[in-house]
Length: 82
Image (cartoon, rainbow, N blue to C red; front, side, top):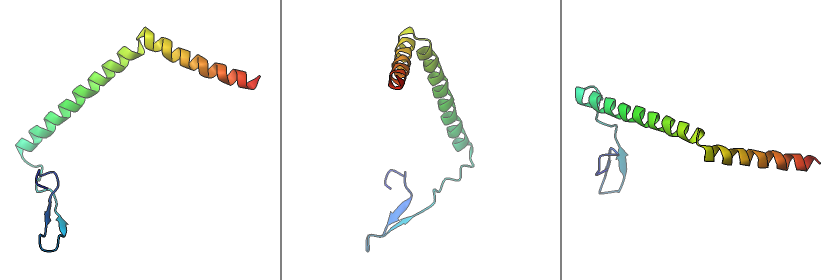
Protein backbone atom coordinates (compact mmCIF):
# COMPACT_ATOMS: atom_id res chain seq x y z
CA UNK A 1 0.00 0.00 0.00
CA UNK A 2 2.76 2.42 0.97
CA UNK A 3 4.66 1.74 -2.26
CA UNK A 4 1.60 2.60 -4.34
CA UNK A 5 1.42 -0.86 -5.90
CA UNK A 6 -1.89 -1.67 -4.20
CA UNK A 7 -4.59 0.92 -3.79
CA UNK A 8 -6.22 0.31 -0.45
CA UNK A 9 -6.77 1.82 2.94
CA UNK A 10 -6.70 0.19 6.34
CA UNK A 11 -9.19 1.23 8.96
CA UNK A 12 -7.00 1.47 12.06
CA UNK A 13 -10.00 1.11 14.35
CA UNK A 14 -11.16 -2.33 13.25
CA UNK A 15 -8.30 -3.46 10.97
CA UNK A 16 -10.54 -3.73 7.90
CA UNK A 17 -8.94 -3.24 4.50
CA UNK A 18 -10.80 -1.42 1.73
CA UNK A 19 -9.45 -1.84 -1.79
CA UNK A 20 -9.74 1.00 -4.28
CA UNK A 21 -9.45 1.35 -8.05
CA UNK A 22 -6.19 2.62 -9.47
CA UNK A 23 -6.59 6.40 -9.72
CA UNK A 24 -4.55 6.52 -12.95
CA UNK A 25 -6.84 7.06 -15.94
CA UNK A 26 -4.14 6.26 -18.54
CA UNK A 27 -5.30 9.21 -20.63
CA UNK A 28 -2.39 11.62 -20.59
CA UNK A 29 0.75 12.04 -22.71
CA UNK A 30 3.09 11.00 -19.90
CA UNK A 31 1.31 7.69 -19.42
CA UNK A 32 1.22 7.09 -23.18
CA UNK A 33 4.98 7.68 -23.29
CA UNK A 34 5.51 5.27 -20.38
CA UNK A 35 3.43 2.58 -22.09
CA UNK A 36 5.32 3.11 -25.36
CA UNK A 37 8.64 2.73 -23.54
CA UNK A 38 7.49 -0.48 -21.84
CA UNK A 39 6.30 -1.87 -25.18
CA UNK A 40 9.68 -1.06 -26.75
CA UNK A 41 11.41 -2.92 -23.92
CA UNK A 42 9.16 -5.93 -24.57
CA UNK A 43 9.89 -5.84 -28.30
CA UNK A 44 13.64 -5.60 -27.67
CA UNK A 45 13.47 -8.50 -25.22
CA UNK A 46 11.51 -10.57 -27.75
CA UNK A 47 14.12 -9.89 -30.43
CA UNK A 48 16.92 -10.81 -28.03
CA UNK A 49 15.18 -14.07 -27.09
CA UNK A 50 14.62 -14.95 -30.76
CA UNK A 51 18.30 -14.29 -31.47
CA UNK A 52 19.39 -16.43 -28.51
CA UNK A 53 17.04 -19.20 -29.60
CA UNK A 54 18.49 -19.11 -33.11
CA UNK A 55 22.04 -19.25 -31.72
CA UNK A 56 21.17 -22.25 -29.57
CA UNK A 57 19.37 -24.03 -32.40
CA UNK A 58 22.42 -23.91 -34.68
CA UNK A 59 24.96 -24.56 -31.92
CA UNK A 60 26.68 -27.89 -32.75
CA UNK A 61 26.96 -28.87 -29.08
CA UNK A 62 23.24 -28.29 -28.51
CA UNK A 63 22.29 -30.17 -31.67
CA UNK A 64 24.55 -33.08 -30.73
CA UNK A 65 23.16 -33.28 -27.20
CA UNK A 66 19.55 -32.98 -28.33
CA UNK A 67 20.07 -35.63 -31.02
CA UNK A 68 21.73 -37.88 -28.45
CA UNK A 69 18.72 -37.48 -26.18
CA UNK A 70 16.34 -38.32 -29.03
CA UNK A 71 18.42 -41.37 -29.99
CA UNK A 72 18.39 -42.52 -26.36
CA UNK A 73 14.60 -42.19 -26.28
CA UNK A 74 14.18 -44.04 -29.60
CA UNK A 75 16.63 -46.72 -28.47
CA UNK A 76 14.81 -47.31 -25.20
CA UNK A 77 11.45 -47.51 -27.02
CA UNK A 78 12.88 -49.95 -29.57
CA UNK A 79 14.41 -52.18 -26.91
CA UNK A 80 11.16 -52.26 -24.97
CA UNK A 81 9.39 -53.69 -28.04
CA UNK A 82 11.92 -56.53 -28.43
